Image 1: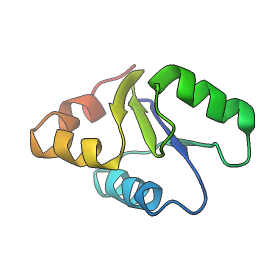
Image 2: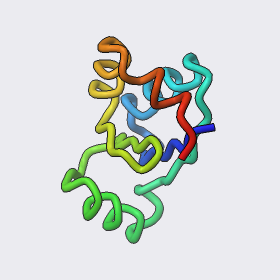
Image 3: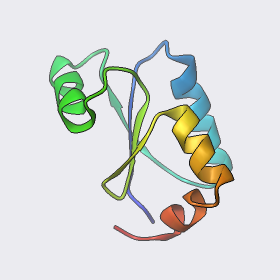
Image 4: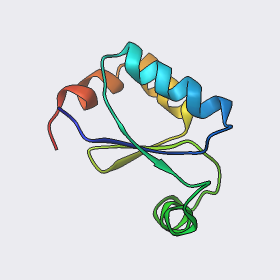
Length: 86
């Protein structure tokens, strides 16, 4: 199983969409809530240089947000990432 980590907040519609999209592809993920943990938000911003959520990592590779996740899937790049082990 690939390691999927998603930085999220509770009220973000793109976070919900990304979670549902990953579930539809059979992927499981670990969620890091940045709205309840300031240290996690700082870590996310340090890793991504972005302040928006979701921020998605697959096997340590930064995919980006929801729109980048969908674009990666459409280009055929998501399936191989979800099949690879860390």
